[in-house]
Amino acid sequence: MLFRQLFDPETSTYTYLIADTVTKEAALVDPVLEQVDRDLKLLEELELNLRYCLETHIHADHITGTGKLRQLTECLGIVPQKANAACADRYIGDGEVLELGEIKIEAIATPGHTDSHITYWVNGDRILTGDSLLIRGCGRTDFQSGDPGQLYDCIVQKLFTLPENTLVYPGHDYRGHTVSTIKEEKLYNPRLAGNSRESFIELMNSLNLPDPKKIMAAVPANERCGKVPSLS
Image (tube, rainbow, N blue to C red; front, side):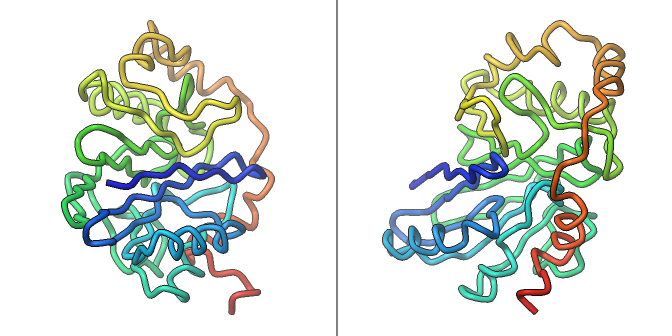
């Protein structure tokens, strides 16, 4: 398996490239519109065929690159089941598995940050958590039908029950971290370690965070798989 973690500095978004080195089939998870040229160049250099663009959720802080990549490569755009994105080629639900050659990518439903969110469990040893579980943090729950109780249940009952050496690759990081493990987050995540469900809900409801800078443009564009006026 080829696995690369790519970064967008403007929005602190991680995009992940996953590929089977034998079949050359590839997937990008959470691509960013402004980084499409970078991603295409890497795919070309590594002689990979982009088969899927996977979204963890409908993003509010950046516009997805899926629409543009789909135009240029004929890949399939895949979004979580029940997400408000009529443009998707396929919707993926809890327990469904995508295959890239010998690579297995299993969907784990982890709503709470938004009402439709998927974590991708790759080959049984790493999870791409989007905005659900972050390194020493978690996604906010105060818009897009977020629910702190639901997020707590998904993290504790689904993600924290995975093997403790499972690698955690988040959708964002604002402090320079790149990867963690389930064991680390169980021990050291300040929003979850030692907190009950009730105290977690109280904490999340008291954050009072400002809206993401791009929310007014990003959400409607991402509901159309990244289609904005300049791409019409």
